[in-house]
Image (cartoon, rainbow over all chains, first blue to last red; front, side, top):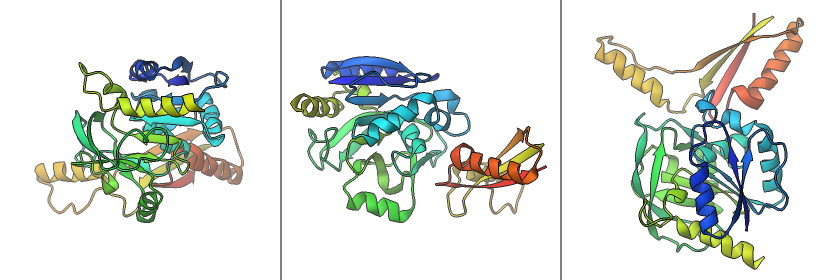
Length: 222
Length: 79
């Protein structure tokens, strides 16, 4: 598995994400946002958490228009895998690869804690190692995680099995308690919780391991 | 030529920040504030001198970057 992690000014989970990919057996390249092309033969691109470009204008808005993001969109359109975590989820929504947007948390507060999630979809490489309905724990740390979309889009996401995770107890006002969303082909995943901070028993649990392991299994079989 | 862009949340989109401001106004004793909506004003200095062309160009900027049209509406003023 060949993984690339995009680094923006203000990214702060890029190294954690690289560690999580490496732990699943990936060769990892770090990719600077001003690059205009991706390394050859990447299987998966990770867009990390943090505060890209200081959250100026809107969270993820400037990052989504950076030179490398055109290449990320092309990669996704070719059927490549992309995961955006926290700020990375915001970036994916701003690029249009995932629908909807992430607004300020309904209680205005920055939420930073480990939280319960329910696995909804088990489709696609990111989700296949989880069991449907499984309850897991992952850390969240965000100010703008309130997933917002029109009602008919929320219904469509449900109908197409594109809700990856839901919060057991909604921390941010997110529509339908949605914590993570998949693309129609299930190869692009955006989520507010941090699976890369849940891959080591000593640090935040190991409920994120299955996500990276599932991806590795699919890519190594390919 | 200058342009001013007003970006606001669309009607019906809950504005948590506006609500917080409304509560704070109430705490300061300003009664009768039934709603607060918070938006952004963006001012642009343009080299374009044709007003119509400037408006077309700034509208394109709004669609591509300045507003997130999932939740925000915008209004362009050419000054």
